[in-house]
Image 1: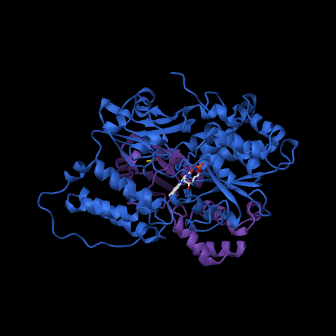
Image 2: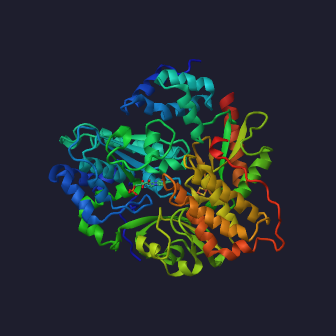
Image 3: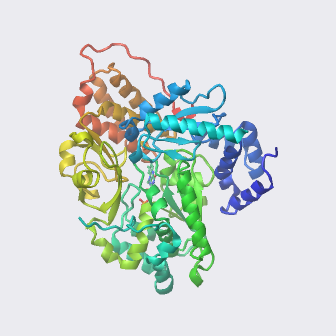
Length: 165
Length: 432
Ligand SMILES: Cc1cc2nc3c(=O)[nH]c(=O)nc-3n(C[C@H](O)[C@H](O)[C@H](O)COP(=O)(O)O)c2cc1C
Ligand code: FES
């Protein structure tokens, strides 16, 4: 697989045109890397560096600063559970514990089959619909209960299996 | 009670451009471009006494006058949708329910200050809302509201979304600019202020999403009209984001000066299970908390809250009932600021971790009475001693929660105090 294909490279040119300096395209391009590969490896950082003409050291500094960039692979279904105050008051920690125990993994661990990982995260701006979680940095699932989260995990799992066949 | 709504109006499908247009949308932009000079727009905003909704309550019109008028340099606007202060979730509501009013406000700000490009910085977790806003921006481009020669005028400007990647500090305006430039989100030393030296060293203004969303109605109805809504010294409405122990948590747009108990009882259906209030954080987790007695009488505006030593912040109201464990709440808040400290300034980098560890030992029943004064002292040594206000944001809740709820902490301290405590490990989590 090419690191970025023709269409993706066009998209990067478009992103670059938003800014007077191509360095500013770094965060959006790192997002593209993560969306395509699931995480950002040292090799990816070097390739991005060549593409945008930015030293690898700068990119390493950026990737390690922002918590949403995965510095190592996560599960296909990465569950990000908020435990900040408003969620905590409505069962955020209980939800985190329930999901971790159910999957048999701890914070930032991945299940043996590579399917799931969990992460305790800070407030996601969903405090009125607590407790809640986010999946793969994308969709929010709010007002959760144990039953709801059981169903959610099942449905995400079967979706993944369908995608893989 | 009939209440005034400026942003979250009760109009179905207002997020669609046609619906927004048929309800007077983009008419303020047209009015400004055809009938007003940029200075007249700024003056109208000054007259309105609109104050920033991002936390600091700074006068928006005044801020806009700091931008140099005659300059060969390009000027920029950053729209702050980082919204990462725990307990805040109001800007997200604007992206979802009324994105075009925000876009129109941004365009008016660009016209007023002679700006050619605006960057909307949105926290990376708001994936869904980034897409919603991008759709709205695309629609506005198609209709000629954004881009070259807007509505046939000489005025051209672009609006781009810049997605964050998980760092509360990037809500701080100078860290935000570094993040747009593709760097670590480190706050910059000020002065120079952004209006003199902002994005890529050029004049820049930073405004919150809600602040900008107020502008179209101000231009349509006049600054005088706006200045008379709510509390005269802090006029307009606020999007109160209420969470925690209430029956109907959510975002409620109400006039400034609305009593807190009106918000909790009349809009949020009261405290859950009919319990009593123990503590309320009035404006996002960094704001000094209110006791029950204070909560019962306080009005929600800048001056009223300042008078009792707190502040309106982001108007994110976190309600805790009589059963809430205040030590655990403060520990969780401290853990957040420890996690989010960017690590540049020693008092903040080390102090946040220190406070968290002392709170942890108190919570585990291993604290000592002297820890309470120690916490206040550490907090006071962070406050005012850092490049940006994250230090203050970390210090205030510790200092004020202990001052106001000391008994809650004392109750967790054992009568026979442990003499040995684990060594303080000193490092910042961000690098672990
Ligand atoms: C640590 C920190 C985090 C901040 N986060 C935000 C934020 O998420 N959104 C925001 O609008 N302002 C935030 N601010 C305030 C901004 O620095 C700035 O004052 C504000 O965006 C200006 O807009 P306004 O004048 O319209 O309020 C933060 C400040 C600090 C110190
Ligand atoms: S506290 Fe969990 S989303 Fe805000």
